[in-house]
Length: 471
Image (cartoon, rainbow, N blue to C red; front, side, top):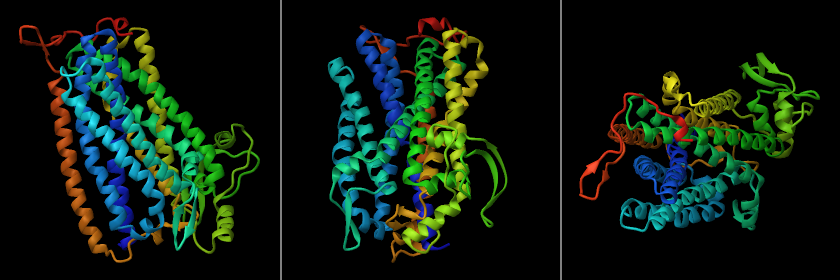
């Protein structure tokens, strides 16, 4: 395998692995902050116990996310030196702010939060976890600013073969950023919420601390539904921007080889023949792609063949068609998993309002096994976003193949990729083991006035009491 292909695989593997932890950290931070807020406002010890329980899982995930994120920046210099030379003056600003402001903000206040229990006034301690949550969001914003520039490069000029920023404000105001950012943040909230609902369901199935985990299940389901719905809304806005900014990505995500008529159908599934550049079979819903693109059932969508000819005229000879199968199917995986998340959240909220959760043992099991859904949706969405931009590293200015390090050999990349895989595998095994350990250990004991520790509640014979108490 050529060095360029190995470099792509390595970056893809490490990025997807790292992105398993980022959304969960953001989502859990906000959920823990909310639980502690209720504790401070209502002086309800149950929410303090929940904040501590979920806070431990958040800290474990946060630690691994930091370690895996460091590797991402090293790869720019190792495998993508020509890319780094071109984008360095642009990426330097957002990534420096992310590291010096956002990361240190998170790290400082997470330390205060960890060691501040019972040592700080309640409101100051609460402020610490909110600063952590805000810090994770700001960190995501600056990373997405860099990524959005790759998708829609603005605010720069090219000097001596590399991009030089001349309008920092343009980077911050690009439409790509403001469609990408809410999509990612709502996805992160959904990830944290489904993790909370899944673990809460596990605790309820084993009839452990029923009253506490009824509360966290209710919170999780509400956030899961609304955040998943908002992900879909933000994704719709992002898809409409693709029609303006990257129409080839839109065409590839639909395997639309030729420009549609007045009304473009949405392809549910298809047998894609990339060799002959056509679909052997396709099941289509009339007009739905036009609705996705223009909010109406009429509207022409350009096809891959026509866009390829336009790009040749604009950028010169070359193949500007991204991997169609990967772009097409990753988009559908994202849509299917996202739709399931909305339905599960809605069904759970309805059953809670009707106080029928005690009858839904099977649904609790489904929620437990639904924990991977947002991770699948997040990963497939990023794959579609990045693969659909190919062959461009920076759209319209630098092809991915031109960004690879010229002196790095395939053997070097194999060595580092095997090393990363082993280390990441060990980290994953350790994290899963610790997650299982702390989940089974349960909520921390409360200390009474005489120094004795006691549990808020012993395991119950019934998985649910009155759910109305939670609402």
